[in-house]
Length: 82
Image (cartoon, rainbow, N blue to C red):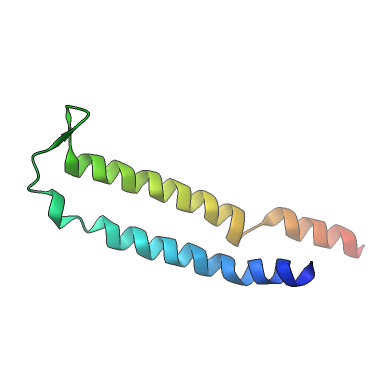
């Protein structure tokens, strides 16, 4: 079980870094600026794309706080040592 915990501690920041890089790449949406399509009948496609990127950023930040910085694990380890 310790090996699994150590593996998740090391891979967590890599996962978050990958997600942030993916969001940075997807944020460059030059292809939607000339698209006149309306999503839901009133939202321009470029604005909808940015709303989706924002939701992706929310999910990435949530995962970053859960995966890369698990404070509860550190607290449990400190209590177990005493």
